[in-house]
Length: 408
Ligand code: ADE
Image 1 (cartoon, rainbow, N blue to C red):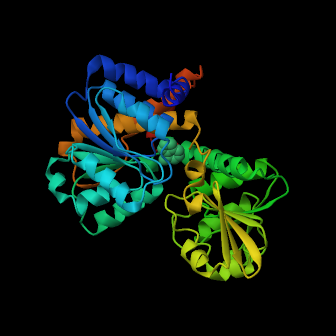
Image 2: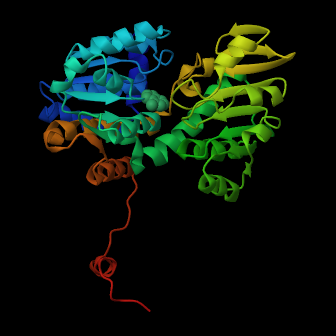
């Protein structure tokens, strides 16, 4: 067996919910003849999602959503699955990246599944020729949903897109535990550094930042949070973390992890204050959170080794992991989120893709929530796979909750 196939079958065994959906898809063929175009991180768990969609009868064309996150052995194995065409390759240039997206679009997909919105952006700009055939799409990540909402606000989004990222079964698990564990795994595997006792700055206290801070605390790190939203900053403070502006944190941190979705979060004024030997990593979708342009232009020297670029600035060394790209996937040993977490996210994706096929025609262009029924189905199946059962409301409890008259 080749390594790509081995990785996929390793992942599959820990994805009971997605496997149950794949079984039903195989039996009922609800996606028969549907063309699905995807731009996701092409690694083993993604391959399990693609297999499930293909098992349901879909023709799937897929490429990567980040130049560094594809695992080439998995991409090769995926290309051999009947009904699947994979164009992803690790280490592509920007023009190769978009050429691969164009190959996906050449299949004239009816459903698109995106992670970061580069595919949907292309559809609305240089590949508008493909727009008329699109029923709708699904978006995986915070940054993608952010871009979609901006498009929708300007009335530019031409079809319905389900914001998979925003549903509780995604963000409370994938964003919190997935990013929390996999970003730290990526940093630790790449640097071999100890977290216990370290001053670690987490930029952004959204769902991903919360997960990172919580896991770092568990490892014994001294966590400093930076925020722009006073409510989130206060939440971080009451969760027990130090809160301060980046300008101050820059001089205190030994490791920095950005998870804001915004640009230039660590930039020139901070580089001036940062301590020698500091390690900078990004856990957000795009490589814009650390101002790499400034470092490239102003460093006296740069040393590049596998997954770590060292910039010498004003006599001190600053280390940047994975070229400032998603540290959990783009470091050489990055594997992305843990399997069990992606079981939930990709089960949501599979069911939302089906939702677009069955209901997309009736949905208005714009950003849509994941239907509650899908969210609850994924949760219930996961609980069942864990052998857990929960209470049910009694009749009188239901009545109590739906009434307003009983008080003191
Ligand atoms: N593996 C596949 N997609 C992923 C994502 N969006 N984040 C982390 N790991 C992944």
